[in-house]
Length: 278
Image (tube, rainbow, N blue to C red; front, side, top):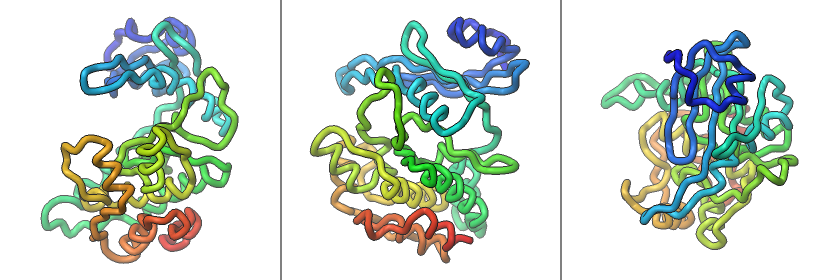
């Protein structure tokens, strides 16, 4: 890790007094840092607004996302976290979770002619951590392979900035306008196309979990559309139900197929998925 801490806001430096840091993600609207301190190891998230370009509209909500996630984590009972504002937007810090994400862990399963099958124990760990969130009355809203961190003792579900299910301070809240289209349920895609926004639900999380398990195990998206298709074209394909056949084998494949049902009421609950895998 780098020993330079000049890129973190003063308020974060004062709270953590870092001994080392590493930039993990640098994307439009946010950065994520792995930070060592005498308190432990933390993920520090910084958000700032995305300026408009010729290809993309402005996205002011990205400035609020870290604080919104911090508020959600606090509502869910996580106490070793903090969040607030800095000069460009908002920030949070939360405990760092060690381990690969699901897509990276199952990479051997996707190799040509691989005989390695996706582990049902790993899949069950992902199901169980989502079940914990659903049991508290929340929907994640952004389920995808990168948000399941498979640790040595348990799986962690991260990135809850878009979650819905309880009160969030009005100053940090913003409408849900969809997530990565690969994992959007048809009803979410249709709502975003028609109104520009949608409402995350637990049933939509189930669809996203099915798409997550499918692409991690096989490398295939749940819905067929050109790789370079604009997002509205992708969403039309999802909303119209242009699904690929599920090629994952065994009980996992059967459950994925059910989770990817077009109608929300036809999908199993998270508890039914857990029972099927267990």
